Length: 148
Image (cartoon, rainbow, N blue to C red):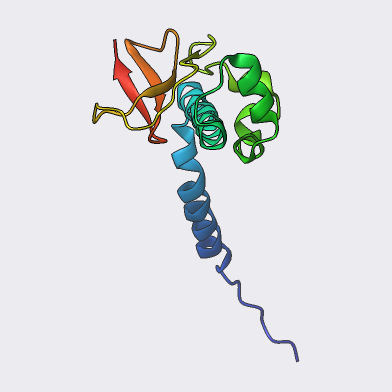
C-alpha cells in the first residue's frame, strides 16, 4: 500500500528568509560608492600618518624633520602594519589622499608639547580635498573635515 506524498511548500519560507538575510547584508553596501571607499581609505591613511608621527614625537621629543625620516619610521611602526588594508602594504600610498590623488601636506618638526592654544595642531591634511572640504589629522589623533 502506497502512501500518497504531499507536496511541502517549505521551500518558499526558506527562500524568503534567505532573501531577507541577503538583503540585510548587501543592500547597505549598495550605497557604498567609490566616493565612500576613497573617503574611508583617506581617513585610514591620515590616521596611519598621525599615529606614526605621534610615535616619533614620543620617542624623540619632536616630529620628524622631513618625509624621508617619517617614511623610515613608518616602515617599522605598528600603525603601518595596521593600515595594510588601506594601503596595500605600500608606504608610498600612505602619503597620498585616495580622494584627491595628491600628496598630503605634512607639518614636519612639530614638538606637540604644551601648546598655549586649546585647539590641537594639524599634523597632516589633504592638499586639495573634495567639494571645498579637506580631511586633516590632528595631534589628538582625530581626523576631521575642514572647510576651505
